[in-house]
Amino acid sequence: MGAIAAAVVFAWLGMVLAISFLEAPLKFRAPGVTLHLGLGIGRLVFRALNAVEIVLAAVVVVITVAADPPGRLAPAAVGVAVSVLATQSLFVRPRLRRRSDAVLAARDNLRAATPGGMIERSHAHYAYAGLEVVKVAALLTAGAALQVGSVAG
Image (cartoon, rainbow, N blue to C red; front, top):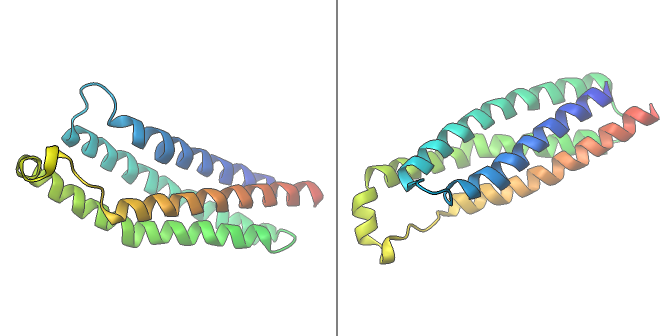
């Protein structure tokens, strides 16, 4: 069962890496992608990612508890990843959603009101990115520990 949990963790890790560290930064560099379009795409993609992450987290927790892996590293790392996901889902994403609502509602006025029409990132973006780094480290640790535990057991 540890190998199954490891596979689910690595699938979760791959999704986070692909979306948060590849798709999200690149989307605004694509020709023709406006702020309005990029925010709309981002909201849709991250809402879907969040829903899938919650399902994967539940699966990993259930399997990890049922498998009772040797040592404390795997359960601790899974706990960190799940805690980060909960923090992002309950506290950070709602702030980001409110900010994107405000930016979309005031995009024309905001462009005129800010130097060079640039929109500064909110602190919530930095918090989300920092939490993503922590989650990636936790998932990598959990996946490796679960894999090693499944081979040893």
